[in-house]
Image (cartoon, rainbow, N blue to C red; front, side, top):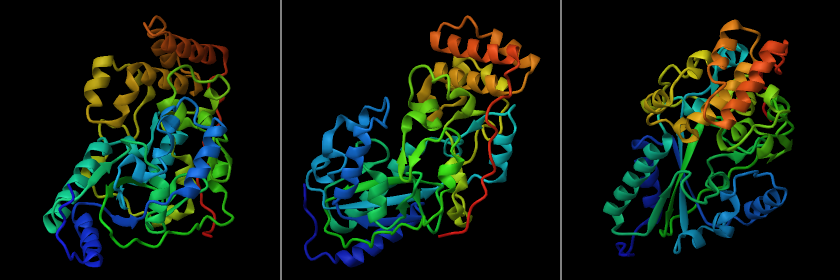
Length: 372
């Protein structure tokens, strides 16, 4: 498979690759080696603490996740690519502050990023191939056991912050990551260092206190996990803390002071569709399964299915202030075929009828502390 042109100037090639990456719509591209020993140790401690909840895929592939050369034999370098999406701002906070509206994580407002980024990475690989000949590679965008954030850190794109997400001094936190594993002996970039300093804004803002220690997230408490990954019933004690967040949660990202440097993505496919940036809860709750599938075609939200969609919205309706229209909407779903939906609807209805509605923890303002 490896038929690369001899005497390649890999320093020049690395510069060319970064230029081609920008031409393809990536805001930044870095090159790393494959040594993830520190990340591997942290991952094993995290898994031993059962912080991954039902996400069995996090441990299913053993150490292939932290040893790229075992996942893709022959891997020598990893191209780590960043693609920005529109940053959350005042409009996002206004949605969180309005319990009649549904909050959808900003990354999911537009089209699914997986296919788009993978397609761009494939185009990048093809462009490299035209330059050096056939070479070994595989592209990944959340599609395999890959430690994308530690890889991005050693590739110089940013550092893994206290909220466990990547933070960039250039772009804050509002971006997607993708990787191209290659057998090319490219020069590597300097790793990024940690610039969180003494700031704990992301830890303090978390509605469910899911960041149990700096750099450690208990997924079982995280609203993103509860609304996207969790298959069954959402724990009773966490429901009131979820507010109106029906798909994901951006609180820890919004709190990060480095986001003042976020420029926002220019990719049209990532712009909001179907009014999901500020939709009424009752409107979304009325969608039939066919409406859910058709309206969210090409959206990452589709993966949770209609039942969990209704489950999440029911919780948000239970957290909203008393409203006769909400009660009527909930009653329409009391006999839903899914037991999961029925249970959450009954909980929400009891909250509305008993006077507990609106007792959810109100979202706090996400004002950042000074940069460290």
